[in-house]
Length: 124
Image: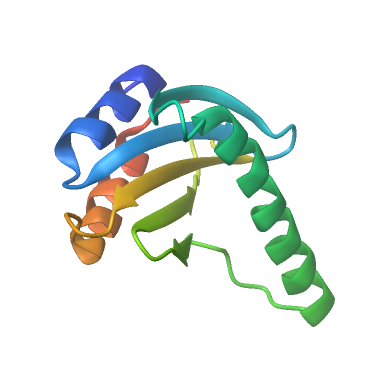
């Protein structure tokens, strides 16, 4: 089992093209931990903003009566991928991992696979 700091370090160093990662509480909008980013890309601001994405999707699913769980959400920009993976089990309720990838260097399928593996090992 990995703690949140170890999980964030693993995501940033082992996922090809990763430029930033955060563990976020979407009930409060607060990042519990961040790594990476840059002066022009504040991971705390991005993490807080993406809580709105998750909340909106959950409201929409509720209005439609959809019973499935959200595994992940992908936002594709012209030069980046933003991957949001909701945590399941082991106290992860209300949390998500947020990963920013440079789309010119990233393999999206592998990034999703590796983020799922990191999520499964994460002890919150």
